[in-house]
Figure (cartoon, rainbow, N blue to C red):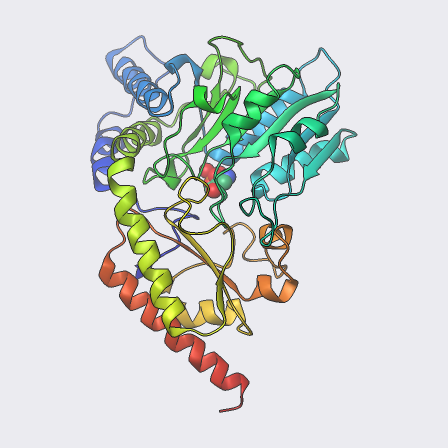
Length: 396
Ligand SMILES: *Cc1c(COP(=O)(O)O)cnc(C)c1O
């Protein structure tokens, strides 16, 4: 199979599996039961992973709260900052192009009487990079009762990199917390929580060649410490912010994967970006009426180097995906979580695409393991699939 769906999940790096293996087999102690050696070594392994993850994102270990993934981390950030007693916490600000893991907890808050502002982003035809929002627009949306601004650092569909550092700087004194969903960013661009200027940040191990079921929330303690409420109670693990027995093998895997991602990102991204450009060039040369969704490919500061999102005039994306799948090529029509629903991508709609254009769009995500042969093969299969589908349209 040719796997080009790396925004939905990535392959476990063999080095990560090696690091996890002992903790899946002989070393099965509970990191909370440290009255004996097996518990103590598990605890030490968790703390080593916390250190690895912290270093990878510019945080200190105490600022890392392990969770089951980014969805849980984002829920903890949003619901945990909303539920703390104190100043009026009735309003949150976010973007129309966020992941479901952000939009759905915000919708939950809205159903329970809070106000939520979802800002528009620059459209495909705007002069600003597609999918971005200005610090000015965010600043204008903030009210005295705003408790949280939540921003996606790198978009999982169109690859837009949001100028989060600039935005956070501009709203520093407005009294609200800034949460960043950095799930797609770690391993693709440099991620540093201080440069981002955020109070909270979410990460997911399986997006950077770690295991599924592991993630974390960065909760700032240095400078302006950030306080949130837990969603789970019982046991006091993770400083009481995420109770429940720790998944030691998954956490160890996340630590190893984060260390590799931070170390190898700047060396491997140029190669991956070249392969992404090679894919686009091959498609553009062989498929008429094809266009890029999202920011321009030659703008690495505003677009992830491993992301390609295209629309192909008059071709149904789902049919094309099925054609690709039959030939062993895995791609996607949007985020994995929403691709089962018939509605076209809310991200593509938010950047101004018509329903038809959104339905004729495909998303590709490349990774560390993608090869040039795979790209050439996938491009040929895609071009053949498009001419077949267009031929059927014309009744050939
Ligand atoms: C994958 C993803 C999530 C959800 O992460 P899980 O660890 O799968 O829960 C959230 N936000 C973005 C941008 C993602 O890509």
